[in-house]
Amino acid sequence: MSNTRVNTDHQALIELRTDFPGHRIFRANRWDGRYGSWVATLRDPACGVDPTVMADTAEDLRKALKVEAGRATVPGTSR
Image 1: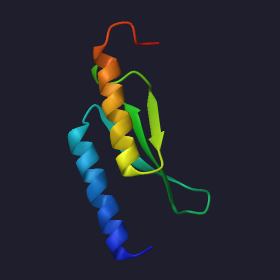
Image 2: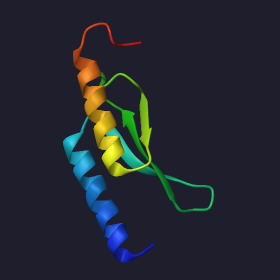
Image 3: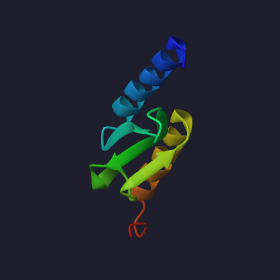
C-alpha cells in the first residue's frame, strides 16, 4: 500500500469521525493484518438505529451513516 493511499484513508477517517461524532468509526483488520471494512458503531441513539454499520469504502460508509441519521429522526424506524 502506498503512502498516498494511507494518507488518503487517514484523512477520510478523520473526516468521518468529525462529521459523525455519534459513532465510533474505525477500520477493521483482516485476517492477514491488512485493513478491511470501514466500521461505525453507534454511541448515541439519536444518531442512528443499527448498532453497527459496515462498508467497503469510506464513501460508502458516509452514505450509510447519512441514511442512519435519517432513520434516527423518523418515528417508528427503530428496532
